[in-house]
Image (cartoon, rainbow, N blue to C red):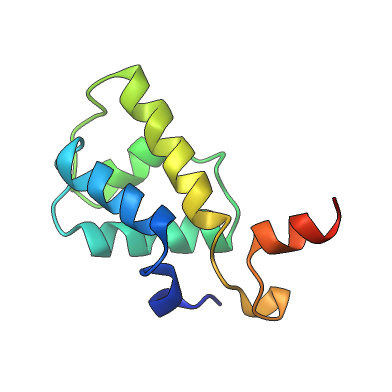
Length: 101
C-alpha cells in the first residue's frame, strides 16, 4: 500500500493534478489520480494504456495531442516515483534508487 496523504502533498502529484485538470479537462481529478495510483504506482503497470484507463472511468475522451500524452506519462511516472510505499519500508522508489547510485 501507499501513503495517499503524503502523495497529495508532493510537487509531482500537484503537477499531474494541475495538468489533468487544465490541459486534459479531467473531472473529479482526485478520483482519477486515485485510480492511476492503484494501477501504475502500486502494480507498476505502465504497459497498460493510460488513455484507455481514463476512458474506462469516463473522465476523458482522448489526449488532445501526442505532446499532451507524453507529458501525462512523464508526470505519472514522476508521481509514482515519489509514493511512500510500505513495501519499501516507507521509502519512495526514487529514494530507494538513490541508495544504489
